[in-house]
Image 1 (cartoon, helix red, strand yellow):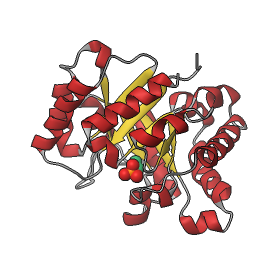
Image 2 (cartoon, protein in one colour):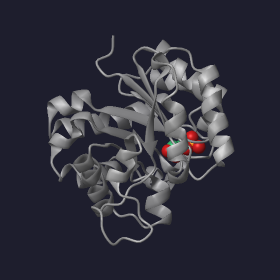
Image 3 (cartoon, protein in one colour):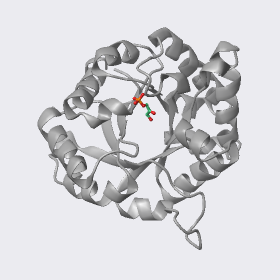
Image 4 (cartoon, protein in one colour):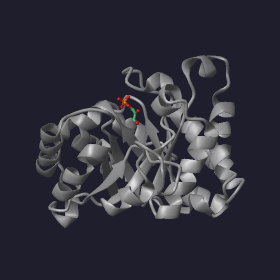
Length: 258
Ligand code: 13P
């Protein structure tokens, strides 16, 4: 039996309509069998959170799916036009929030400092942050993978290692996101083990408990091999999470690998 309960989270990104978001939850209601030892979460766009929350609250308890958001403001409530504050997400029923996704780092100019502030803010309001780290193809090819993920992790750790007690890290190599090119299980495992050792340097207990998810072209066909690795505690799934049968199959693979 594993110490860490697996987590499979679907990052829906900026996809879908209200109708397709509802259909996806209905699909999961049909496809998802009762799961033990695996937590499942979905992270819809902000504007779909409320409807999805209502549908999830109707799911049978044995198939309970948690709600997550894809981003939050680093600030407390106040004059920040167009931003969404963590407490608002909590009020809608969110349990998780993704911080530092590579698409936001790249497209929105999110620096390590901004990501650290968002991570800290998530903790303040009682959301569990899913911290994304990962290297680009150029960084991997130049042998800088460990240096990059260490820098991204350390930026957040400097806020106090205690916050990592129930935090989640997602290793998402940028070159594997949306490309169909998945990291080899051993390649991912090596980075996961590195991240856990790095965490252990700050807080050994937190390192043993922290869940480290893999993200980047995870599908039902490759999930089991990834989950077989000792430090891969689940997945952060993009494209495949938009298909109920495919996402449910990934969740079931996580359970079989318990
Ligand atoms: P894909 O699964 O579409 O590669 O996306 C991964 C991801 O970015 C999850 O956050």
